[in-house]
Length: 519
View 1 (cartoon, rainbow, N blue to C red):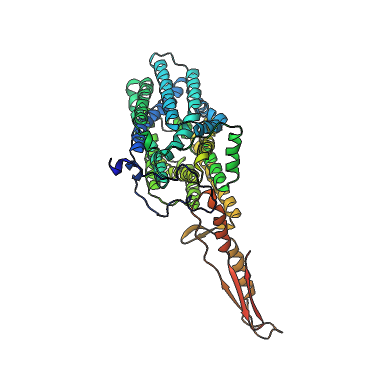
View 2 (cartoon, rainbow, N blue to C red):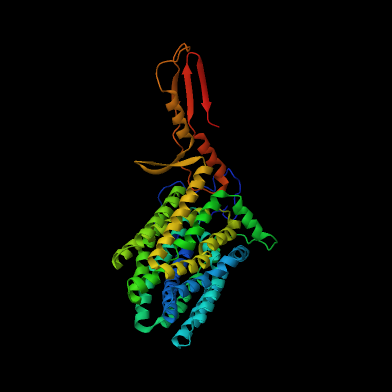
């Protein structure tokens, strides 16, 4: 068997290391890795190729579904309701999906969930092609699809760690995002052409058939080459255990909070883009599909760039979120169609940089036995916030126009990122500093020390009554480099590094010799 077709087994993979001082949980130290490293693993390669086909069909259905609802009702608010119905189950039951993912074999679960999604797409295709579809049909099928997604999402997210080794996980997560964005690039363009040529019904039919590709990939896998995690036995309190696990780890809580805000508002593109197409630029389905394609181009580039990173910095996540929100707000006022499309490309790049980095950070910071429940919480706040944001954004778009709707989405995202950045900085004893080298986190104590030194050394002349002038020397330890976004197990050492970076003031003189260390 060729080495390129197999992944080297990690003998400790199925035994989570919970030692808080262990270095096993720290990601590889290399700053760059191969962009397509994970595709050397045979099982992951089959999964990846099947997902490209299936995700393309899924994006075709998303575009066709929004266009169908808009055609039936002429209302952006109705599009928001459809989106809300699809993601409401994740908000209500998302955590239970993680418990199911931890209890059962993930490969078998995915075969069942993907088959169910294919059936739902086929039903919508039949209703549309026979001219029997009503808007309530779309609402109901969107709700049922959301119920299946409750189990499918956390299972699919955590199944990646069973196909590749720990050292390849970050690359695999990034390639998954690139996969999704490749489909997002192809799907809307194909959907626009199909809708314009033969109608929305055939787009739904193509999506139903596309699920055969991912199911085939799952069936062709070699189960003995999977890093199968031990199944969590059925016990009471497993949901509470998962919540307690996250609550005890701030390095998991804050990224999830930030993902929740941006997922609820910043990524609520379907509701707003349909309004731009219908009310601002007055374009047909084909050019509407190109707007989604432009967004996908930037997202694909962002995902591929993220796949090469061996290290993940918290400041990158925060700054990408701020930049994403600001640019989204600016793009809302683009005067022309092509300017708007170009702005969406950059918005997509920044959004995917944030999304992929956050996903990798949470997965790498979680023990294998808890990963299903933690990722279900992650997906719950990421996609489950859409039922809240969808109607709100839809109402704002319909009441004040698409430009104000998109501006509000970006403003909320940027504000949330700034608030989280400030909280993280204060809790870590850091502050934000703007210099010619950019924006960075530095120890807050250094500013205080410099102020004290400035007030002390006002004059070189010794005050009356002091035998000799007291020379004041400030030795400021260089701020420790911002800790790599690391698992919870190393959080204490990260805080210690920040504490050690505090400045040291050494006072020397004839009658004075002391060292004052910040606590």
